[in-house]
Image 1 (cartoon, rainbow, N blue to C red):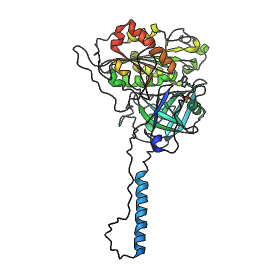
Image 2 (image 1 turned 45 degrees about the vertical axis):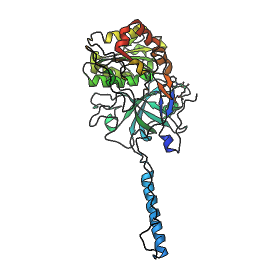
Image 3 (image 1 turned 90 degrees about the vertical axis):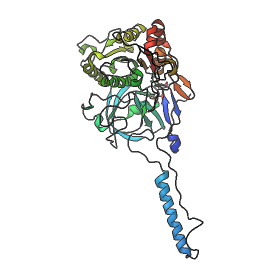
Image 4 (image 1 turned 120 degrees about the vertical axis):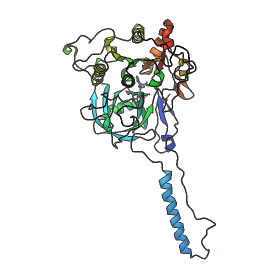
Length: 434
Ligand SMILES: Cc1cc2nc3c(=O)[nH]c(=O)nc-3n(C[C@H](O)[C@H](O)[C@H](O)COP(=O)(O)OP(=O)(O)OC[C@H]3O[C@@H](n4cnc5c(N)ncnc54)[C@H](O)[C@@H]3O)c2cc1C
C-alpha cells in the first residue's frame, strides 16, 4: 500500500485533509475545517428595479459596471477563505530553521521559529508558557513531492519557560524543537535531514493526541516505553504529569539503536560507570550527553525520585525484557493505597472500549463516565508504548485499521503476557499505543 500523504496543490477542500497515522503507517482522512466556508454574495441589477424606465442607457451601463465591481469585490472578500498567518490546523505556515544539531548519522534536532510570531499560540495555556495539551504534534510538508508527516515538539527545557533554547530561542518567541530520525528511503525524514539553518519549512497543527490527564484521573503513575524518537511524546507526558501534580511518578524506558543518541563522548572519556551495561541503565548527568539526554538529565534533577529514565542500546545488545517492564510497572505503584474504579463502559478508562480509539483525539475527547463504585476512584495508571510499528507490535500488539482510521486494537505482545501473569496490572493500568 502506498502510504504517502499527498497534498493537492489546488483543491482547497482536499488541502483540508490531514494525515492521521501511527509512527509508521498513515491514513489520510477528511477533516472538518475550523474555518466555515463563506458563501459568495453576488449583486446584480434587480429585474424589478425601482428606477424609472426612462433613464438613459449609459446610466444603466454604469450601474451594471458598478454592481459587477461590487459583486467581484464581495466575492473576493468572502469566497476566499482567510489564510491564518500563524500556526493553525488547516493551512501550512512558514517557519525558519534556526539551528540543527546532529546526534547520530541518522538522527538530529531541528529548532524552528515562526516567520509570523504569535504572542498567543493555540498550543499554550493563555498567559503561560505551559502547553495546553498533554500530547500533540504538527505536520511538516515536503514541498517537492507534496506529502506531509507528523512530528512531535520536544517540551520546553525549563519548568517555567525561562531557559533559552539552544542559547538563542525560547518557547516565548514560538520556537519549537524536533528530534527526528531519517529512515532509509524515507521521503520526509530525508528531506528534513537535508535542511539547514535559515531554510524555510511549512508546518500545520497542532494535532491533539490522547488526553492523558483525564485518563490518569485519581491515579498517579505513568510508565512510558519508547523506541527512538518515540521518546518525545513521553517527554511531553512527563512534563504535564510532573509539572501539573505533586504526587505523580513517571518512568521513561527508552530504547535507542545507537549510543550516540544518548552520548557522543567515547567510552574512555566517560568517568561514571553507566556506559555499556548489558541491562537497562538509569540515565545520569555526565560529560558529552546528547541534547536529548541532557534534557532528560535536567528533568531528573528537577523532579528527583518522581522521574526515572532508563535506557537500553540496540548496538550494545541491551533491550527491555518482560522482567524489566514488570519491575517498572510494579515498582512505580508499590506505595499506592488507591483502588482504581473498574472503568467499565467509560471511553477513557475501559481498555476494551479504548480498542476503538484513534490516537488523534482532538480537542473534544471523551469525558469520564465511570459509574461510582464504593471505595474506588476513577482513573488508571498508564502504560504507554510509543515508537516504530514493529516496536509497538512487539510490546503491545498491532494497531488495527477500522473504518478508514487506525485504532488502538486489543492489547497484545509483552503487555498482554504481563497482564495475564499479574491480573492486577490489567485492573489498574490502561495500555495505550502511540
Ligand atoms: C503523531 C506522530 C508523531 C511523530 N513524531 C515524530 C517525531 O517527533 N520524530 C520522528 O522522527 N518521527 C516522528 N513520527 C514519524 C514520522 O511522522 C514519519 O513517519 C517518519 O519520519 C518516516 O517518514 P518518512 O516520510 O521519512 O518515511 P516513509 O517514506 O513514510 O517510509 C520510508 C520507509 O521507512 C520505513 N519507516 C518509516 N517510519 C519508520 C520508523 N519509525 N521506524 C522504522 N522504519 C520506518 C517505512 O516502513 C518505509 O519502508 C511521528 C508520527 C506520528 C504519527
